[in-house]
Amino acid sequence: MSEGIHTSHPTIVKRLKRAQGHLAAVLSMFEAHRPCVDLAQQLHAVESAISSAKRELIHDHIEHCLTDTAEPGGRRDSLAELKQLAKYL
Image (cartoon, rainbow, N blue to C red; front, side, top):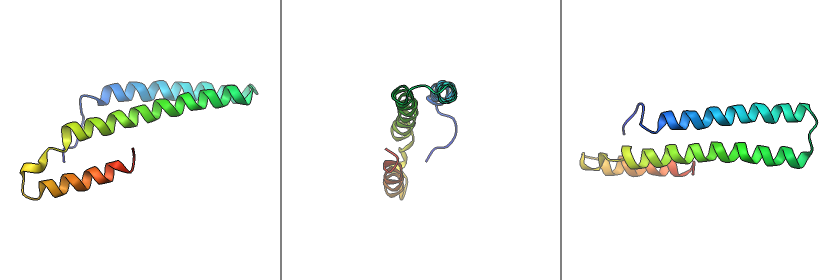
C-alpha cells in the first residue's frame, strides 16, 4: 500500500475548496431565507461535488496503489484494502 501525495490530490483539493466555497454560499442562502427548493438544489450540488472528489480519490488509489500483488501476501493485502475502499463507493 502506497501512502503520501498522489498526482490527483491537487485536483481533488481544488474541487473540495470549490465545494467549500459553494457550501458557504448555501449557508448564506439559508440565512437569507431562500426557498427550500433552491436550498435543496444547491445542497445537492455540494453533495455531488464532494462525492465526485471522493470517487476520484478512490479510483486513483485503486489504479496506482493496489499494485503490491507481486510481494508475498500482497494479493491478500490488496484484496483486503479494496474491500475496505468499496464501502466508501
